[in-house]
Length: 326
Image (tube, rainbow, N blue to C red):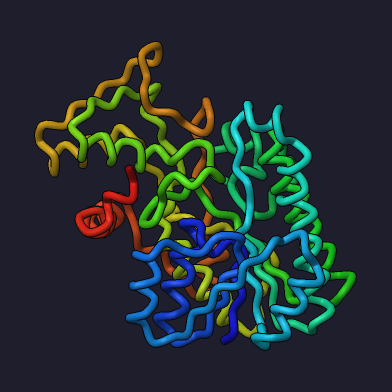
């Protein structure tokens, strides 16, 4: 496999790169910024081949040049801006350009270069308010209600990607990620709010009390689960569906996570006090469970990172690289 990952210097992109390099793939990271030296050192110890190409997803001619240079057969498009309300008001045009126009440039490049597959990394965010009102979220649902700019842009980009499947005959697959956390997540200026597991893990390590707005029970998915699932999807010659949810298939809360943190960091304290909260959530309401039947049946991938498995792996990573969270 010759893979191009847009936004490969982000935390999901680094997890994807690790997974594909483990399987001896050639991975090209198309990103304005290089990965940090710590991740690069990890890549050097793997069997695949890694390249970084400095690039903007809005530069269609450069995209095509890179695709041809490395004989890319699969694009995994993760590049995105995840804004808060303040950034929405301040930089709406730039957010929409990167999130939507950038997707168009990548799709056009894929079609022009005759690529085998285009994987668009979508999100639970496209379900919008529906995610909070339905107990189980399936890919067949049509009553989606995106509201904020991130949700709207992800919804539009997924639809654009699937439309280009019809227009250009591309093998396009959209993967909708649950609420992601895990190794290599750190402040980069692209995501305005870090995940709640990240925030509370950092507080536990620093000895800071975590004050939660609510328990926050939702479809958390570990970043290494995401990488393994996308690798499984990329390896299929024929997929029975265009859209796949990627999640653990279960739900747990940040309150549950904090109790697990307390077992490891005995001096860690936490409480639920909405008016005093120092932990920020992406949404004001809990999300439903993401159904992963398609992922299991269509891609042959069985999720394996529940709360305990995620915690154990994250703790091991943080023991080595936790200073990157600061």
